[in-house]
Image (cartoon, rainbow, N blue to C red):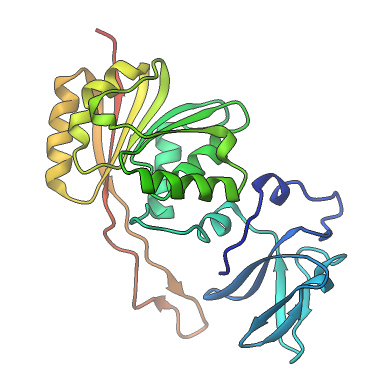
Length: 272
């Protein structure tokens, strides 16, 4: 997908009829592996291997219709989802996959109004998903020790209009958390166990601790720290995703799959 500046509020504020207006974000879809994130602007064009598309011609069309390139190839006009937007982010770090982010949101109970502390901003991939789901009344406090990562995350969040729901902090979360009474602490760190005592002080009673770690050694140290510092319901999962080729007479699992990316550890804070 091509990268461009799109405000998330404009993506999810369509006209009642669902027509594309001047400046609207559009996902031009060919198939699962080929799509283009663009803005409908008069006088601009998109060059692809399937031909040239006049982006101004998108104005007035409905989401779900198609547009043809100058070669007569069809591109379907779709409304971008939040995941379509964040996959266009510039990255300097490994990011958490959708399969893991989805379970973090559900099992941590993150939603509108949630107060979330994040440790390890990175490129802002998970930060954006957290901010999207806590809006409009919630807040994400994101800690990152690398200033260059923080600057990139800020640009990425600004590009989709989510920065207003995030407070970025150039601090080491393993040395302390400023916020108290928060609902969730989410960590993506090399040494998450060092942040466990700070997470305990920061969380409200019954609040949720979440840690994403690529190795089982990190999980063991973190789980031991959680038990030591007054957490219960400590458990760890790994999520594997396998797509299927579905076609009459040929249905089978795809040859490639999204296997191990990391382990997710959850826990709940109890009061002393």
